[in-house]
Image (cartoon, rainbow, N blue to C red; front, side, top):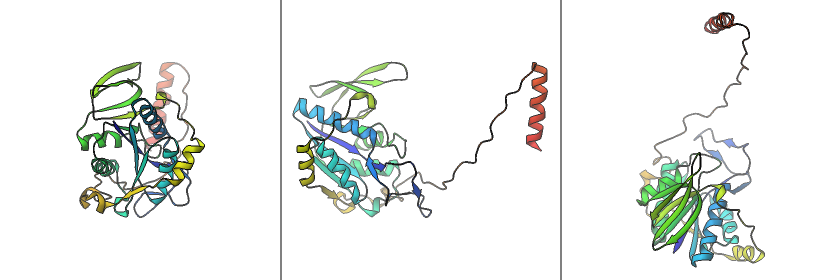
Length: 260
């Protein structure tokens, strides 16, 4: 079974700058890491590889420096890394991003399972994984905390709920988004780091993927950031004391002052 892991390189710090022209993150000069939730996706894919003798491919969409994230994934046991890189992809929202990644997965060819982290730390939308499954028209399960069994082209998983969990069985190929409860990511081995250093990273652009220009980047993004600002400092609230009629009077006075 071929397994595909989708990862994202994100800023290591929360103190990021915004490009005022297009309201996108300025990533140059900011140290980046693999999105923390994607580390669990990588680990789970490697564990499945060890059990089922699978091939695992990791893909990411980003600038040229995102190659570093792919090499780190390879050092953990991933077989192959693919970078989706083109200026035409800049400014993609979650829909355009999932469209582009889905096209890359189609180009890879036959696969049995796609694994993503539940969400990215810089966007927190949790939309790209489900978006990929929509574009590929395959079943998905989100918030997966355990893969119980892979057998006869069927997959049984535990999905985390607010209270407890539910067991879901779905046919393959399918897509999962995983949570941190699923495993503990391993550290790269020396052998893995040496292999990652020598690995050839495949790069695909818009031309290789033959994408519709109107479906990628800012043009293909139904949602766009119109304005970014820091919220005004909130004034601390008050605790009103006394009997109910007294409190009601105080509240009315405060509301009058607020209006005027």
